[in-house]
Figure 1 (cartoon, one colour):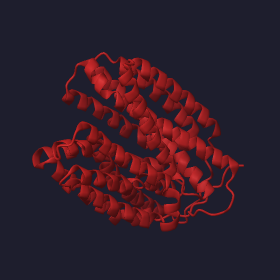
Figure 2 (cartoon, rainbow, N blue to C red; figure 1 turned 60 degrees about the vertical axis):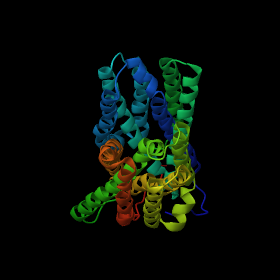
Figure 3 (cartoon, helix red, strand yellow; figure 1 turned 90 degrees about the horizontal axis):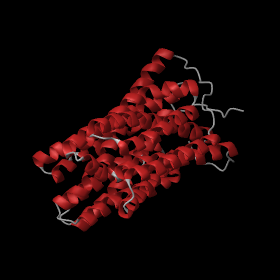
Figure 4 (cartoon, rainbow, N blue to C red; figure 1 turned 30 degrees about the horizontal axis):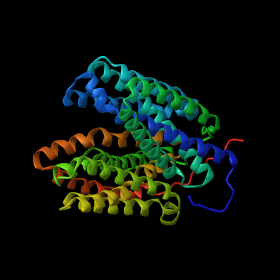
Length: 395
């Protein structure tokens, strides 16, 4: 896939803008929930352990729903699947604010996670089809939009908390705007259910595809573990190991997220120049370097620098793996669903494992274990080598 001077079909550009909007709204929904999590905990008067178990239900719901999403998109199209998952996901956001106890909260999180996970896969399927049809590596920009949505959602959540706005009121307003925004954006989606090319040797091709998807899933798993660890543990490393203030800890994650967002927006020319395999090798090397700097830093400024390098390195791993999964011959939707399902295991399992390891050997030493995953990304990068698949835009 290369960035050329050939004009892109206007429908594809409109679909790309719509896809970016849907990604941003997805990021905003998730960040809205996370930003008001302390208030919800206080409302329920629950402890951290019970809340942690409830939060696992959201990841579990996503992993349960993701595998079947590819089949649903292949049959009904990603436009329909996004519509029937994004609107309920927004509704369940309101339900979270109204949960009377942690058990009911866990049930709502399970339901929201299922809708949110399916929504994630479906919008990646549309993004993959759009970038392949336009012959442009746009996936990183779509994920940059998700990051921007997350930043805005978290900022609005903090502002609502500062203003004393009730969680139910804020969630209702946000959910309504997000649902309407998604439905508006879907008007510009294109139908990705194009005829699939036939493999000359189905049995051999099937073995190749399955092996490649597993390797791409492992790349994504490594990437999500590294990304999730920064979200959950970088700030605590700054406060607990380096005696930084809570404000500096928050700034540490903000620096990481900003660096990641900037690189995702710059991902198109970078992927065009280096190619996907070399980009992933560089991603593994740079993210591993950032983790080392942050974990071994003797003072806060160096840890903040490490966090920035960490974000710069990990930024393109997830979108690159999604693009590669979407190139699966005859199984684009299923390919993305498979890679996403394996990859989301990193968000679900990675942070708790780092926490358990940190309890035994110290958080700074536990973070060093992430370097092994960064090396894994670089080593597995050849699995993301592009596959030429024709995906003509429907007339």
